Image (cartoon, helix red, strand yellow):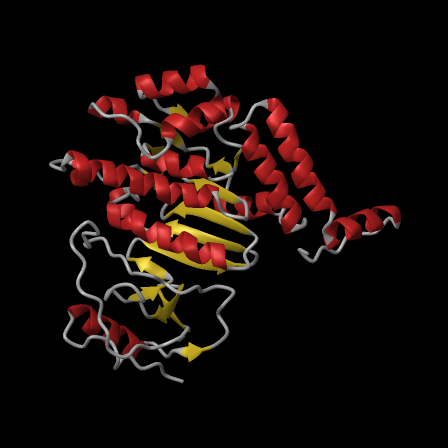
Length: 349
């Protein structure tokens, strides 16, 4: 079955590009709700997301259309945009951000190896939209990685930073913080798979995840001070929580780089993976994805609250969340399985 794009704005160059793609790929409609949530906007590397938006296009839409096709081994979905006239091939959120389902995991890949997977503002927008889809899916874990074996993410695109006004720079900083906060706020665990460089915003992206695993050649740091600036996407807040104030202060004020071994020693990464990093990430995830998702979520929330509340307040929060976990069907199943000496069968309820 073919999905028509006749209702899209035919005068645009983007329409003609997508028409060419759809002519080369057969689309089959199916139940993709487990993988695809409605996209709000499309992003591409060349888009200026701080420029004034066009007026929303009010013509007919492809309402509720979820479709699949293979483009560079990535599943894409065609959907309409409700809030502006930028419409999308979601699944490839921009030419440099891709989502793919891999068993219980969703893999988010920064695919800009020619620029060491650096973060432009449009890529931050695309990551934000991708995380919205992850949140609406039934995946049990998010894996974040960079294309190639040289760089996870080399940080912000410095060329974009020069010549910006104070207010536009503040808006860009808040965009990065908001995007990475979405990862931290997911109801499922997340793992950053650091394959090579993770500098500046790249390390801040990794630190927004619950876990970090690294290849032996990984290099990490917050080198912003060497450019006369400072971290702005959460580095000054998340790094002390991971490695302690003294080490964080040293790393941020000197801008020095740490290798994988030192990062493991100081608690910046959880594991170093020899060989296939993504296979190692799946093995790491299987340590907890077999458990009840509600219990995992309650436990994660309690740990995260511990960083922001005094101990006595944290204990109250722990008691409340432990009570909520105890009331689930999975709690009854887990305790029954323990008594009956069998493997528990959790249903996430």
